[in-house]
Image (cartoon, rainbow, N blue to C red; front, side, top):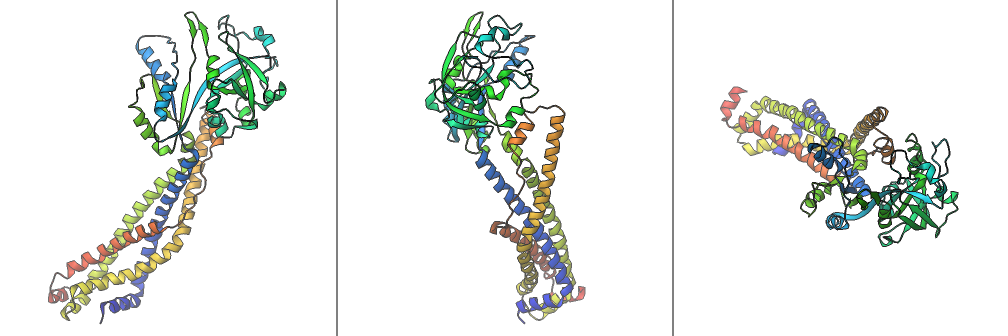
Length: 485
């Protein structure tokens, strides 16, 4: 009788044994497929998040390092003077092939001259912040030349690349944004409330004085933006200073904003400069590569630092990464445990069939054909089990993935709430959580790649569980096998 026919008859006659093997094959295949499918889905979600967010690196003066050096030198109350970023330094980093673009950022404050700032929501006295009452806003103990600013000026080379406009906290509703071509053209974007209060429109002129020097810049309004309500609420409880109020934030071209940073000191005029150069990496996965490449540039890295700003990506991918790690652990455990159980069953099955093996050998049946029969029996069950698993595996993977992801999101939210309630600050907690919600769903599908990996693993287990014990038995002569049976 043909060994293939014998294999088919053996499977159909020994229904109990075949059913047990079928159930084990289905369980192993489903769990392995689920783990692999969840892994693939998390990788796809990560790719989408990276494409959506990109990655950021910020070149800036390393204040922490400067503070440590000052303390090491014996200074009890060190005063750190930041050294600005130069355009040459920024362009060296920007030449990296993984950098898509960059933005200069200059953080300055100013005094409204000829227009009034929007009163802070916590300013109980509702002070007028015009140039006519500057003397009333001099800061006690900060020097006779210092006047409390009432507007903040953020100098940028591109307003589209500024964080507030990228994450939706600000939106241009009239006019245009600031571009690199506007450098030193003295143009500004102002908030709608500030514009309405002062009857300003596109083309209007405003003057802003430097709080620590005699410098004054006359700007032309080229755009009006609107700050989100959540942005304004996030500044409550910060002292009621008008320049902190988001409605008083003015976006200017970076070169003119530098002028407002100049300050009079005992030794002369302190020049301003670029505070940060923000680089946009094509993929967050390339951040470390860009940092490593930049270390070879002619930049004094004892004074400056190039740090990653991948908080948004980590917030979005935190629960996903945890699910991916757990799913891989499940795959390994199930694969190993399933292989041991299935292998043990196959080995015991071969041992129980020693008499049948001895009879077939004594009748002149070849050893390879006998081994082929046993392998075929297992394959018949496995093929059926794998076929069903490709259908059921998707639903199992989706259910398990959603369950794990929901659990991880709840854990992340609880940790974020605990951190905020414990006073770790709204800037690192509530604001970022609002802007960048974690990915809360997985689109799980069974691809040919997962089916191939699962089938390959199953066949390896099957071959090891049949060929090895069968070979061990058939090394004896038929008479010996029949005697031991």
